[in-house]
Image 1 (cartoon, rainbow, N blue to C red):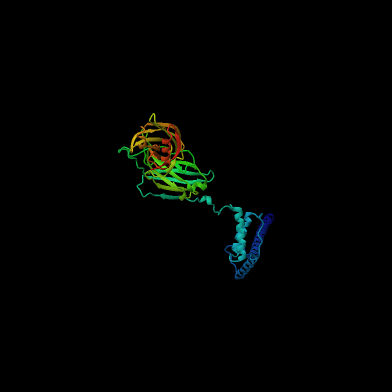
Image 2 (tube, one colour; image 1 turned 120 degrees about the horizontal axis):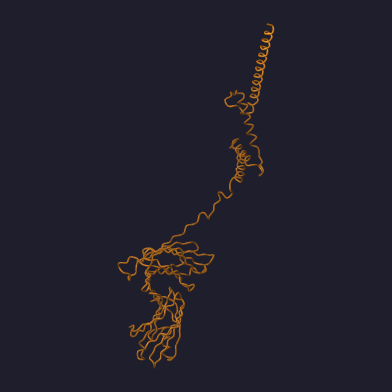
Length: 410
């Protein structure tokens, strides 16, 4: 019995000691939590949901005022070695402290600038003119007369190569020549381009567009000319209808005076196509010689060469013998391809009795396809240089008298 009582007493004492120890530990932890909470409240880090007495609220407000006064002091910007995170935090703190004070806003501006230098590309926000190209000017060249269609072109001067660049884009609503059959509603157009006064002997010509009255070319051509001489030039576009079995027919022409437009920038134009006009004017010069043999009653004309021909590409010469205003006989030279300064050196002879010679005139015409480039008429009834050449031939029989004659369109 005594042994049992001792065991029971020991167990009770042990349980009691354990309970007391647990109670002491709980009391100590509770005390520590309260002491820590009392220390944190004055520092401004209140737990969410905790009750804050009025006395503590006044303390927090006063501490905020102190914080604002500190932020309003002059602050030196940090060096460029400061990390990006620290710069961003500084900017946000300064804005939140007092966004209406001058010192604080200046600090924020300096901070934002440093942030941009780290985060953004410095080229952002800079205006780049190359991204906003100026649109081409579009001009309309109209005709009061009935037009034969419309031509779409673009002109520009290339300062790098000193060339006038012509972009032949398209033609629309071309009128067919009268020689075309009535049931045919399309043609085979192409365009020949030249500059007046001429700058070289090259002939610029587009490709032939088959079976269309609205050809699309999209072809480029260049004329070498200095920019100072551009204003004295004129570009002529001749629109032809190709015919495999006959002469090519001229649909019309477009003349662009470069003195009236500014080609230093790209200029786009829509031009009415006018009917080709045979107007009076200088069209080049022709060197020829005349000779007459009274015994053989033979009149010989030698066609040597031409220069400065206008609007030509494949020229030849036709000579007509005229007696009393009637064309008695015609002869022509060979065709010279692709030149404005052809050389023929060809002789054409006519049988003319001596008594008929005073009534004779020679009509010399330079032709390109079906276009008359220019002409001159020699005879005893002519005045000026043409009459002088004829009279020298009459006063110097058995000799060939050579002389330059000006060509005219008339």
